[in-house]
Length: 571
Image 1: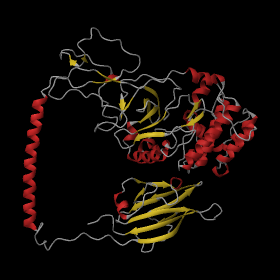
Image 2: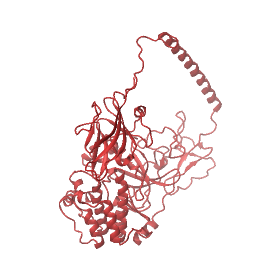
Image 3: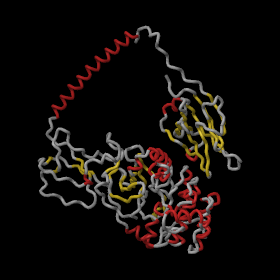
């Protein structure tokens, strides 16, 4: 899903587009992709953002929900110079969505389609910027999986990589299993085409394809039916004879079939510097070709935030007027977007006007009696209208009713409390002898501590063991690494990462509810803690103390573990 597929064109909202998403007022539609629609909105301070609303088909899939929640949590940690960061999201609402920074520039796909192949100088700076973005993304434990020209934006000061890791949420869901494709076959790696293991090297192969596309104006492995393209990616070598000489070593090192033989991101940056004949790549303001830069300068002005218009002393017209406002003036968002409104939204001002109370006739229009003629329709989406309560209501009567109601409930409540106290005293309450059948709260179990425990790659800990020792078969906490990216995972247990600096304890782990299926080691600092709760009721506090050095023949993580057995519930 790409938020800028139309390269800067702001489309008006259609009848089925929401006027608001969880407090974000929608100003225009930016585009659509395989996973949903993308809209332009603004933060309360006026900064433009891209709101990506997931398709309902994906939202109904429980496995997609689980993975989408994990990927968004990981993506929020990515704060690179060449990425569009995730700034807000709702992964649990009726329709999931996320908000990213809006980048005023076309996609690489749109720029090449309009202006043709890019010069080698631009491509070297493009590839260097994407490589730096991937370093930050991989450092957060994320593999992009869908790096392609439509997921790279061209801004005046450099490229931006978007939608990192989101494609993983669609893998293995019932929707993709039924034949809905997510991703672009022409930019997949061989291991993706064959359903193999995905790693950071997968993104390196895609980066080589993106560079070739920018230089040739077409995919390196050609177009055509998906199965034919994927066959060539797995079994054939691309024709790179038309590539500029300065780009061939770089692209060739990226497009190695075996993931272990591909260039690292550090090597890619070195190749870019060597090809540019510079010790350090410089990104001047004119890094883009003149035509692309001119297009960015001339692109339509970003629509302004939708204002809130308050009409004072509004008086409803007679109910015989039944005209209907246009779809984008609807007073409340459709129920499919965002949760039921519980109160003031953190992202916006007053909530949209929801109409008069149920006992009043719903007016179709609300206006001021001094208006002599209808006003001309403004350009673009009309402002959301918030209308205050009409004057003339009998506030004194309403206040008296509330006072009598409060007094009534106070009297009833006091009577109930006094009755409960009397019954409690009869049964053995305050001042009486405790009932013989009453039991005291069970004390907390004694903790068992394991200091400096080394958990090797592909080994697990089973907290039902009398002595905690890493094992190769099934367990509650696993440690797995692939292509230099390591994760802690939980199978049949609940795992949660505590905030950095939080002092872990049994009570803290009992109260923790931010569970996840896996935690990347890149997201942890030495001393950070995790809580694990097994299905048998055991609670464990796991403190990360570091990982094995690079020159060590074994890959492992060092942990301090404290175990409380049968502690999940305190009777």
